[in-house]
Amino acid sequence: MKKYSIIILAIMLITVFVFVGCAEATSANTNTSKSQSSTPSISIQDVEGSTQEIEIEEDEISGDFSLIDENGTAIEAVNGVYTITAAGTYTASGKLENGQIYINASDCEVELVLENVSISSSSVSPIFVEDCDKVTIKAKKETLNYIYDLRTVDYSETTDETIGDSAIFVKNGNLKVSGKGTLTVTSTHNSGIHGKDNVTVQNLTLLVKAMDNGIKGNDKVTIEEDPTIGIVCGNNGIRTSNSEISSKGNQQGYIYILGGTITINSYGDGIDAAYAVEISSSTDEDGNTYTPVIDIYTNIYSSYSNNSLSTSEESLSLAGPGGGYMGPGGGFMGGGFSGGTSQAAKAEDSAKGIKANEYIKISDGTIFTYTYDDGLHTNNDTLDSGVKASANIYIEGGTLKIKASDDGIHADGTLNISGGSVVVSESHEGLEGKIINISGGEVAVCGDDDGVNASSQINISGGRLDVTVSANGDTDGVDSNGTVTITGGILITRGPNQEMASPLDADGSITISGGTVIVIGYFSNAIRYSSMTKTTLSKGTASGTFTVTAGGQSITYNNASSYSGSVTVISTSTATIQ
Image (cartoon, rainbow, N blue to C red; front, top):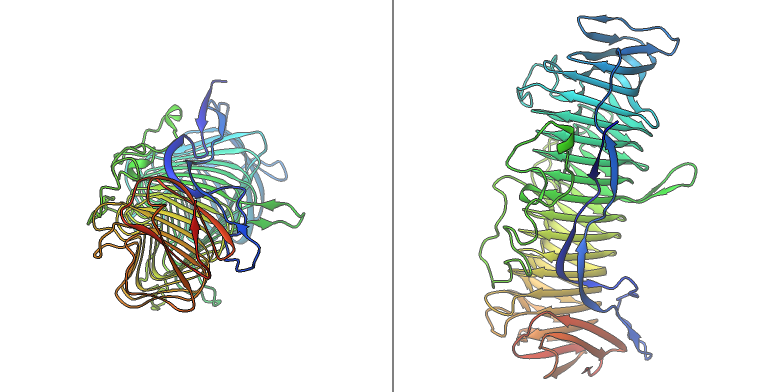
C-alpha cells in the first residue's frame, strides 16, 4: 500500500526570541529570609510546538461493503442505506460509495466497529444517527478507516435535520469516538463530526479535514485518555454551541481536554466553548495519568488558508504555521516592537486560540498557540440561560507558550494566574483584563503596546512577572486604568523614559508593600512604597543579562534592547546589581 507522511503534532520549529523562565527554575515567590536564594533566570530561547511524524496509508480500501451484527447476521441495504434499529455491536468493513449507515435505536446503546472501512456520500451524512441513547464509533486496532462527506452544498444553516451537516452526524444522543485504530474524516463543505448532545473522543488516531467545524458537540465535548487528534478546518477546530441549563439542572457548553495530543489548524477559533474550557491532566481507573499536549494555529498561521480545502489524501497537511513568524502580525523580531501601535493586526472574523464565555481554566498540560487574533480570550456575553457570563481566566498550572497578533491573554472579566509557566512571546498587548491577579507562577510577556493592561485593577501577590515592551513610543510595561497593588512576588517591568509612557503606570494609585519590584526606565513619582526600600541603580538598562540582589534574593533578568534612564528597585532592603 502507498504511504505518505503527515506531520501531525505541532509541527515545525519556530524561531522566536522570547523571555522565558529556565526549565530548572526554582520557585519565584518572594523570600525575605536572611539567606540569599536564587530566582529563575530569564533568558532568550526558542519557542516551538511539539513535533511528531506518523505515516498514514492512503485510502486503498477495496472489497464489498458489509455491516454485520454481533450474531454474524448481515444487515441488508435499501437503496444504499444500511439501517440499525436495535442495540448491539455492529462491524463495518469494505468500501461503500455513495451510501450511508443510518442508526435509529431509541433508548439503546449501539457500538459501530470500523474495520478497514471507507464510506462516502455526495447527498447525505455518511453516518447519520437519528436517535440513540449512546453511540460508540470504534476504530479497530491496526485498521485504517475513512469517512467522506462529498456534498457540494453547505448545510451548516439548514433546518432540515434529515440531511445532517457533517460527515458523522448525531441528531439525538451521545457520541463516543474511540478505539486503537485510525479514522480520517473529510467533509468538503460541512463539519467533520457533529453531535447535537455530547461528543467524547478517546484513544484513537483521529484526523479531520472540514470546511466548517472540525469537532462539534452542541452540549459538551470531552477529549480524554490518550488520543492523537489532527484537525484542519475552515471554522472552529473544537466547538460547543449551547450554554443552556439542561432539564436535569446541568450546565451545558463545556469543553474538557483531559489528555491526548491535539493539533488544530483552523481558519476560525481553535477551541470555542459556549460556556467554559477546562484543560487538565487526568487519571483513569487503572492509575494511568494523561497530560494534554495542544498546538493551535489559526487563520493565516494555519495550514488551512484562503478558505480552501483540497480533498486528496496526499494534501492533508497538519503542519502550521502558514504565515511564518515573519508574516502579518509581526512580533518581537518579525515586524512588531515598532513602538505603541494603536491597533493590532488581526483576522476580520474571530481567529482566537482558546475562547469561552464563562471561564477558561488551565491546570496542567502543554499548550502552544500561534494566532491571528488573541491567544486566550473570554467574552462576558449573555449566556443562553439569560445570565451575563463572568468571562474569567484561571491559570493554575501547566505550560503556555503564546504568539498572538492581538492580545496574548484577554479576559473580559478577571485574569487569575496562580501557577504554571506562561510565555507570551509576541502580542499587541500581553495580558489584558478588567482585573488581573497574579499570585504565583512564572510569567514573561512581550507586547507591541502595553505589556500588561487592566481596566480596573492589577494585583500582584506572588510569582514572577517579567514584562518587555518597546524602548520607544507610547508603550507601558504595566498599565492600569484603575489601581496597581503589589504585596509580594517579583515584578520586572520596562518602558520608555518618559512620563506619558511608563514601565509602571496607573490612573489611580500604585502601592507597593511587599515583594521586589524592578523598574527599568522612568520611575513614576506616583508610586507609593510603604515600609520598603528604594534603590536607584545606574547599571542594568543596557541590553544583556543583569542580576539584582535584594531582599535575600538574587534576581536575574535579560534586556533584549537598551532602555533610557535608570533601574529602580523597591524591596525590603537596599539592592545591588551586577
